[in-house]
Amino acid sequence: MVGFAGYAMPVSYPLGVLKEHLHTRASVGLFDVSHMGQAWLEGVDGADPAAALESLVPADLAGLGLNRQRYSQLLNDAGGIRDDLMIARTDGALGRDGLFLVVNAACKDADFAHIDSALTGRARLTRIEDRALIAVQGPKAASLMSTHAPELATLPFMALTRVDILGVDCLISRSGYTGEDGYEVSLPADAAEDFARALLDQDGVAMIGLGARDSLRLEAGLCLYGHDLDETTTPIEAGLTWSIGKRRREEGGFPGAAIIQRQLGEGVARKRVGIRPEGRAPAREGTEITDGDGAPIGTVTSGGFGPTVGGPIAMGYVAAAHAAPGSSVFLSVRGKALPAEVVKTPFVPQRYYRG
Image (tube, one colour):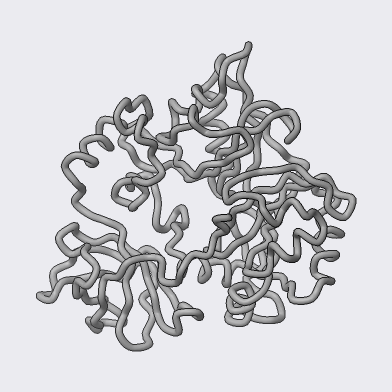
């Protein structure tokens, strides 16, 4: 157990990090992510909360369908990322009319205060304090969950539904943070332990801790806030241009829009890339990246061993001139310049359900 965002969190369970990682890739992993922040955002006096929230994020929320969710970022005035988050449009059948937000644990107090203050008079934010969040991830997740609710087998990727599972009222999205197919289940906190134990009683289901969660998301090429993303990083530098709707790119209307629009047109000085070190030595966060002459060109922001890949992997930011896949770079590890190659992410194929 370790301290994480003010909570005591499990790094691993009895299987250990390596086996937990491989188990999730092969079967079903259960993650307790109840430390994440959940909230409802509703319009004031009939106002559309999506239009209000568009003043803080670059996603196209006006075009977000009912019972669908979208990934985006809360931005500062320089286009830097205050946090990344999931945003879903819901109706009364899912709990409330408006938006359902899930934000990172370490940022949730600041995020919710920022949203509440910035949207005063336009939208009302209500923190959800009485619900847990459990992620069910892996190639056998759909088989497991659909035995309890058959409609989950064909729930589209990034869609939400509300179903009763094991007598528990669950708000479920088909999404996750491992690159595998799976679900995130918001449910009453007082039912969470019994719910988790009931799923763990099924064959092929195991609890997974923070260690494997990190290696799984790194192999999937997914960013971790506070490491690969922060307030000095824009979505364009981070390779998240896909998350900015076409209308928003053209119209702007979000913090830092002029900077981001300029980067879209002119390019950026640095880019997030995948890196495959040669040999077996992992490059950890903070490792300096250099060119062939030893000149600094960037920094590793996430790195470690990829159990599915079978070797060390990393992500980081490098000068744009060195960002093309196949570029040779060097990593300063324990005083030695170790050769590495810039590669495309993800490091393993993402296996999200596409119908």
